Length: 437
Image 1: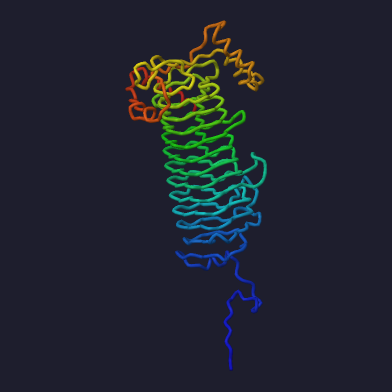
Image 2: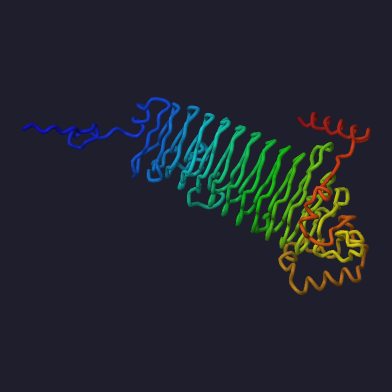
């Protein structure tokens, strides 16, 4: 009787080591799926053909502390269901869990941890980044890498990712990206834009970060229905904007932050407007913060609830040249005799004792204490000098009910036509930019 035993190439009975994962990938024809066995597989890996790598939720790729764990150089690659760990630690070479230098890829439902950077996209377009959980190496905040880093990468879709204990999710020189339904906590900036445009940020939830969302040198983007909580510390802010134009900041909830919405030289282009409509700013130290006197921000339908200071303007400036209308102010002192939902008289915010604590960090430490509250009250009752007017809302809401606050009528704004003086200012602004260049 003869018994036949069939042994695979990886059988230890042959005395031959199984092929490495890299060799298995290299041998796999393009267009096929490689389903990995549970356990640890050694990296780093380089993928140079269109294929799918499926860890089925149980496979681990260990980069061995050298460079990026997985490099994707081909279009049309799928990476899903993997745990990706132990990248290198070089900021110069941007050691990452997954490094992508191609387009039309899918990175889905992976756990990326103990990697310096999480997912790094470089000139990579039309990728889907979905359902991943990403954290950096256990080092100090300033030494961590970014959870997601997109450089010159357009038309990507980032959704339902969880980024924590990282540095930033940063989008550089990139356009038309969608960032929706993500979560971020214990980071520096949960979302950071630099030199970008036409991006959509919707329904994300960010908490316990230094900054929720910060936009720098960017334009034409939509920031809508995000929840931002507990951005605390001296530089803590919910949404920050520096030299941005034509932004739509709509229906976001910003709660328990040092600064709710911060504006610095925004809009930068004198021919554009920023729309800040229907947001809720509650229990922040400062609601709206202006770095200096600005204009052409449209601020309508916002609910300002129990912020220590509803509006603050640095450098002894004023915010009166912005368009304030139809906001709810919890400190409004007035009536609604005709019951149309709006107060009978305008809401005004003036500086009394504010400038003292704003310019003195030690005084700011005690702000909100009984002594400072009493001094602030006395300054309002019997000011020793004429208080500075910060803003006037000619039609404040009497109640914060959303049916009126978020109605099309209350949020509507028609951008005015520019006159010859505005166009002359624009020409001077362009000449200044050319001279600087």
